[in-house]
Image (cartoon, rainbow, N blue to C red):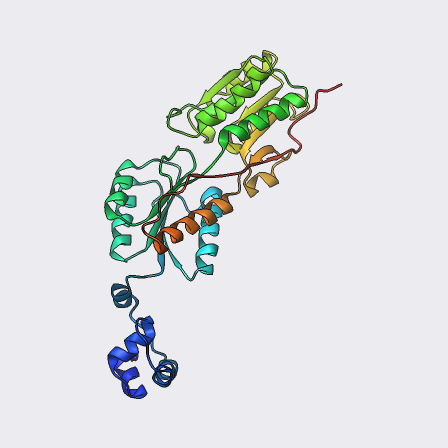
Length: 337
């Protein structure tokens, strides 16, 4: 049978309130009494009721995390940053996966509130506006880390997608490519990060007085890209020598299609991606891509949550924008003579 706080008080020859003060470090206790209490806790292997303790101290040291797909490379990298930094500050992670179901996300948000979590981190590729309203109402500090959608909250962490896309396009131009097409996701483009990627591409092309050429897809899945294969073929046949893809997945599906058509990358056409997850390292040719540090996104996100927890009156800082590294690898051919 598990030991109780009464057992600890009896063995240490102190009151229950004294034991509580030692456990919660809430009020001063004499060194001798504290020593006896800690000794009794160790001997009896006493484990405080964390729920009851959090009600008293107003601290649970728990961060709730909702992910839309725990199996995705994006989510797992972000989650690792969240978990490792949280552990450094003695915070536990309560993890749940919604698999993209908005109603389940709402259910988890309610559960987290009941569990007295001190902060909530949402890692997703979709936008659940009802959940945002729910989190605002709960007044629990939260961060929405979204792979696609442009989140307006100051507390969020983002990437300077426009600069990264500009730099990638300029790199292709520096390699002698003048006929460069962009493949971007059209769905909700006015509300997603895709618009910044497109802006960066257009800016670089305009500076060099080159004609832009844009191919739109509705998503990153294989069937989404299959729907634009004919358009990709037409684009390449028109003289395009390089494809700037707004997601690594788009680039890989297109490379597979080109190989099936008997074309070689980069000998016949150069292809670049955006994301740079470890999964890209196993493909050949190795993909030239804009590498995002998803781990750093998670690490910075939980640090901001913890800062808000420690100082609830702090004014929101500017949105943190993390740098992107252009990985110049094997999928781009130099056309310079």
